[in-house]
Figure 1 (cartoon, rainbow, N blue to C red):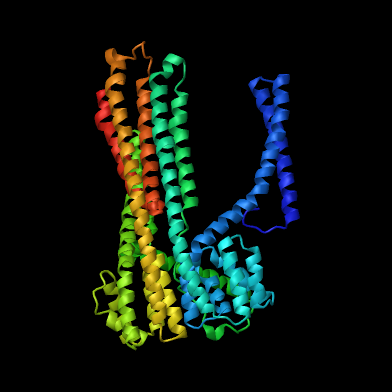
Figure 2: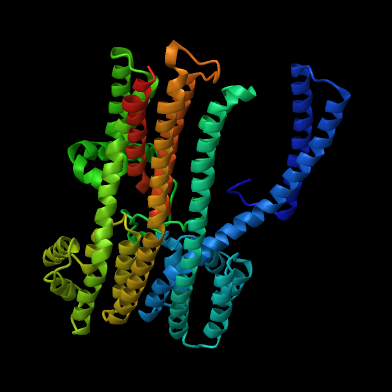
Length: 578
């Protein structure tokens, strides 16, 4: 039912049917399991028939609660997106756009986040259902899961109805939401700090203690090595994955969206669309294949440029190379499976991590220079210059990494390209940056409506300054926990090294396990090595995610800690036990 709409009656009926199926499944599965295991006693059967309805009731309650969870999640995302998008709404209003035009633009913008879907509902009511804008605003206020958007729309409707100053209202809300964004940031950082502390305690420290206890004292208490396997191969990966998902739910979605490359010409928008039949379908498939071939061809012709803009495409090269490396190491040089797997992962992921980090830092430098670019552009606009002339003036200023891009825009204008098309091309080149992309699109939209965009630039400057300040505060606050996670991994490795070179080395003296301990040293060391590698990979991802909000920035930490874990065991620990 996820991703589909359904009436309340249909959903409740589906939930009841699913719960009944769950009860029947538990009963049948429980009886089969008891029969296979030879546990068909009256007590077991009674327990099955008692547990099955309980599980069915829990499933029913969860499925009934699920739509509320989805609505709360959407409301949370809308609340986080609204302070960011309100600057664009205010800028659109200052450039003369009306409510319908503003919502129409929001409905097409990927960088509006969850607000885009709300804007689509508004446009559906206006354009397809024939509602007037005021009715559509009130209906959206009634149905939206966001309390912040509901309040925003409930006040907007009477202002629009009475002919009030909508722009002034947007200005006041923009200022209010900037203050709210700072408060939200504090709560968000506190949540991430709590999650990081829980991760360090439950996923890094607790498994280490449990591994040590079951490895050293388990044989004395009669516990098998199965407990070690459960901790290393199930508890650590599942715990790490759970915390990654938990942090992903708490971290606001990136509102970035790639710039649209192909657009239908306005001159054809009123032309009636006629079904072209099989010929048109064959032509469409042919064009689609040609576009894919051209894209693949561009990767081999201009690999550096393509990879720097889209780092994931380097996997077209690194993954096949990694497969060859693993095959050679395993079949030709007969290395153990752990060494082959690590070599393959490093060969496949390291180029992507380097390309991604290079692209991310480049975009970050663009964002750092964005405020200077807006100031230079605003100076020209305030002097009475047009946007093309202001861009030419801005190209003479020192704007860091943006200097080259601004000069490129100026050169395009001198060759006769319009300012709007120049901004579109610039957005294409920096589409990976949510902040730069949103600013450029706002400038373009405002310039299309009015040549004097000084007020819009002032709004954008304050918005950019506020956003960058919030990002710096988050990185500063969460940087400490990144360091703590790395230190905890170091403690994990040091503890394992000391145990291996003290107690476990004693167990191997004389060529076998000492009866006093009864420790299967090779198995224990293999489990510890794999646990350290898995811990290093997951800890690196969590460290990057907690600091920047982006899981992929943790790949560099994961690669380094995975290498460190394997090197410590291969060079220091395992040789000392033989």
